[in-house]
Length: 363
Image 1 (cartoon, rainbow, N blue to C red):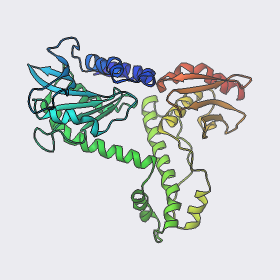
Image 2 (cartoon, rainbow, N blue to C red; image 1 turned 60 degrees about the horizontal axis):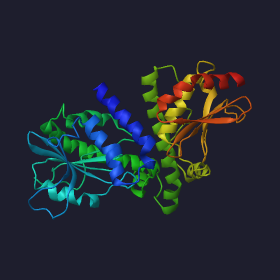
Image 3 (cartoon, rainbow, N blue to C red; image 1 turned 45 degrees about the horizontal axis):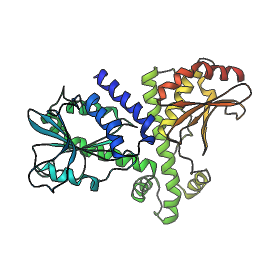
Image 4 (cartoon, helix red, strand yellow; image 1 turned 120 degrees about the vertical axis):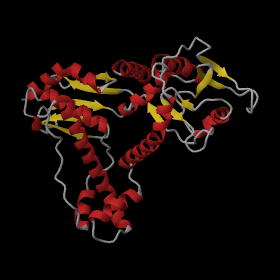
């Protein structure tokens, strides 16, 4: 399991480094898809008895149409893979060949991918007919670790079709629900806002109240995510090593006046979970020099800054996470910033000495 996860992370790093430069479908196949089939799924891409490129079925399919890859086990097609260029988003319209081929082969698994996102389909809704929604979605730029055991089941070494199909329905709906929850945290819908507002606010749910509580629901969501980050980091780094992210005490809203006061704060800045995780790592490093409560953060539109004593003249680090390539900004004694590329949050630990030096200058 550990070795499988390491191979997956190695490919994910390659994808993060190269995705923006891959512009064609063929380049996507060569750079990302074939390595995934080979190193993650464990099939020999150069053995036509295992991996058939440009696969064509003889029955019931339009002439001239091909599926990019078919993976064969025991002389039977088990997995169909259709590829698109890495810069193109995936949608169900991209899967027309997969739909037609799914019913003309023995395959129970179909994959639609742009090399970055991998959507896995089966036939839960009707036998021998590919579902319109995937039961599993793997994003190599944001790997959900809970999905790794399910991906491993699809690999050559651990292939277990019955287990995959049995787990597919739960994976499909749990994954869809999680993605919907994530979408609501990013941009709450009217229904989501109404759901929480009517549970804490006694007045009528008018248009003005909806506008007021849109801000409050966003704020509460961020505070909830902050608590989740703290729990994860305390587990990883050891309880007591870090302090909780400072958040304002919350209370039940009982008047429009309170809501209006909260609306006065800037709501255009979106603090991400990744920024909060990185902040906690920097804070854990700085704790060797000062008490945890002295390390605070402020999020701004252009970057996320980490300060000593909440003082703009005492910057410890800056996080530039709003672009595809992320950077950790560290400042010298003259406050000249040097940006260090960050592919994984773990890389922040390699800059521990400079972070401690920055804290020592101000402490």
